[in-house]
Image (cartoon, rainbow, N blue to C red; front, side, top):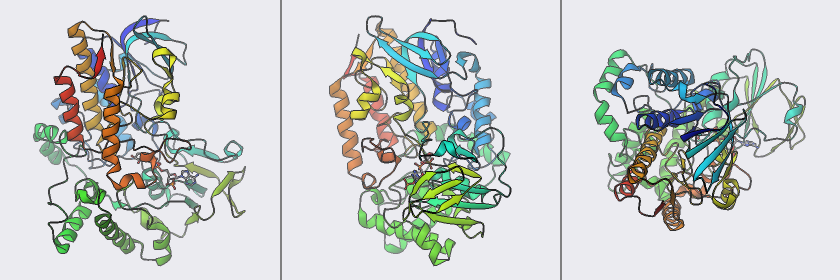
Length: 538
Ligand code: NA7
């Protein structure tokens, strides 16, 4: 659908991923007119862009779902516990079709700027296709991990081979046969790529800087009968994921505390969760591992032992088992034969901690020791400007022309990740200081945020009001609570995208709220039930 120049709508939604699709659905249901934009040529968000080999989510399929329609849930039958990207992309297309959401979108259209007009009490949104839309409300559903770090090394443009960032992977399959391939990055993404392409490439050089603790994924096929079983528990699961620590069915507390268990019992619990092959070892074992260095050290050693069993070779153990940070203090990936890939004769580790990458040349990658690593294909699994990047790449101006990029350049602040002081009628999902990946199963949190936003707009309309903005005091309170919560954990000691340390100059502040999904939700509900105390409404 083509937008006429300068359209007026109640709300503009940016993004056609999980949050955006559901936001459009909810706004339409409540009778708001909505214009949505999506930079990609189709729906899918994360699952549109991240089509790299091996991409898959590691929430379980029974909870990586929409909960607004039981029919929708029952009608989609995931093929396995952790489906791969093509299936997730198909799923979001299925949702868009079933709910007739496409007609609200303008695809292949990137929002470039959004300026708040104080006199008109509305946002003026402009796109790279030349459209201008006036919207009372602007709702960003741009994703937490969607602004890829693509320009990492000097000389990248000179490379004569093929260069890909994982989050900008081409739709056409890449032929690795016989190729000399290099990959930078061994986060959750790099691990999925490496384990998938190791057997396809001629030779693979892994430029490794920081090894990961990784858990072998247990990914059984889901039969019709299995899905019927989950479907019959739809309401029970829907209720449960809203209250657990990380928005999954599994949760902390099921095994009591570390302190009250004997050493043998602790190991038995860790073994049980290890064998579950999910993120439960991280997000549903003993929460003390996030707070108590001694507990963390013991859990870390348990995981190291498991990794040693898999790797066998002491040289590989030395290179691939983390020793300088604790288990669970950055994102824990699930893997499928990732460590085993290093047993292959065509897979080689280049230690770029010892000798960092200096530049990319036409032939390959040059490291500080002067070596040139000649390559046909270079893969950047170098991650994202998480939380803030998707929004600071848009020119967002609030009251008095203040810029979100500048404001967040000084200090990353939000009111519960839902609004930002100084930016009336701007609502955000997947934004900093709300629970997010993987401290929240993203579908759980995004739906909760969309529901909160929608109910807020309905409440404003009921009261005959047109503007809402959190007060500075309310935001201060949330930021302080957020910092207090994260500073009590060991997470703040480890460098990671959670802490913003992967982006030069970014403030070191925990991006995800880690007080728990249930607690966050309760606070959100209290604000709504109390008539939004601390928000200025006009
Ligand atoms: P991550 O987790 O941010 O990982 C990025 C990786 O890239 C990580 O291993 C980095 O090493 C590495 N990296 C980045 N720059 C360099 C340079 N210059 N040299 C060597 N290595 C480098 O991104 P992912 O895409 O894997 O995952 C992001 C999230 O998406 C994931 O947590 C899921 O929630 C989904 P470093 O650790 O900085 O030493």
